[in-house]
Amino acid sequence: MKLTKFQKSVYTIVRQIPCGKVATYGMIARMMDSPAASRAVGNALNRNTSPQIFCHRVIRSDGFVGGFNRGMSQKATMLRNEGIVVRGGIIDLDQYIWKKSLK
DNA sequence: CTAATGACCATTA
DNA sequence: ATAATGGCCATTA
Image 1: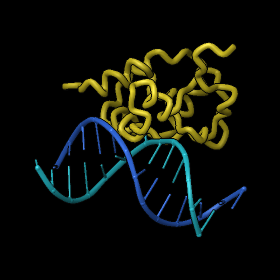
Image 2: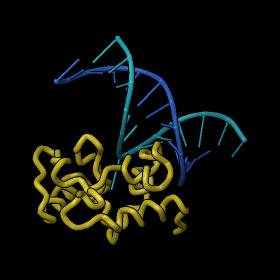
Image 3: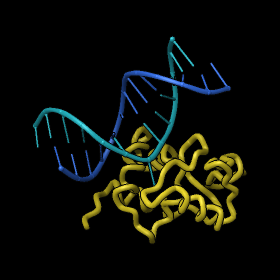
């Protein structure tokens, strides 16, 4: 399976998300020089459901968990396992959003 | 090559 | 406040 540079970039970013934190698609897109590639980012993850990647830590900018190729239930479960509180498929962004060094 | 799709985002009614 | 629409990027058919 061949991964393009875009995919690699996405994985690289997702891989850097610390445990117990989440990042939004738009945020990742911004880190890779494509602030509007949020869609492509999600697309990439969807096409490559790699169990070794923390794709479950990637959520929408609205705080909504978004979707998951394996079923959002599984995604929500993983997030909960990380210690994140997910209610109704919604996560508290101000609390769990990945901030590169707040302060 | 062109067209269509998608785990999205932001704006406008 | 919620609902609906367009735009944007990369990948796949």
